[in-house]
Image (cartoon, rainbow, N blue to C red; front, side, top):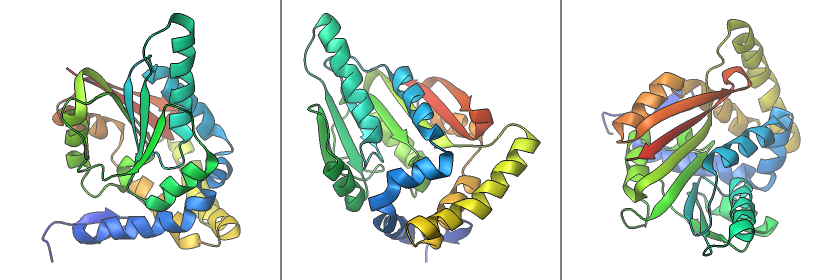
Length: 252
């Protein structure tokens, strides 16, 4: 047993076990993942994702990596924006690689359909099968907290970005007010597992997801981790009072 531990919800497990445990969670929920996102957030996650896409601002000819992107929800936004920019002013074709550790999530995304710019693949965020300085932008949405070793994944994101490339991460975070935090905790721990049991017949997986959010670092701590991985001009923007946060950095 390794002396180091990895978090799996409120449990600490051997790092070698975490990937398999997380894979098991998403194997179960892949088919109704997007529906559950709508129910858990009352659809607000769509507004957050629109804001992320606007911040990323895809351009013609760019290579964009969408990590933990299995259902393609973010990649479709990027592809449509890239094509709209290309129609307005021309430029080469771009590419959006949808990469996810979980094959079931990728399969769910392919079944939903994609855009011409999109490709699909199974890949580990800690060991991407890509050359150095490959991509213009790297996005990971609601996935970084499921990675076994977050600092390693951040360094890998820095490695595959071109000079001047941009890193963007959308993740659940820490509400900034005590009142909102209490209300959010009540909703998270009481309602979300119950919705998971009702819709997916799987309370346990959504209990893990709620717990994993509570274990994830707060906004400033995570911003410091991004800087430590080699990114510059790191900022974050709170959404819905800090229920989620958009972290942004540059590979300079």
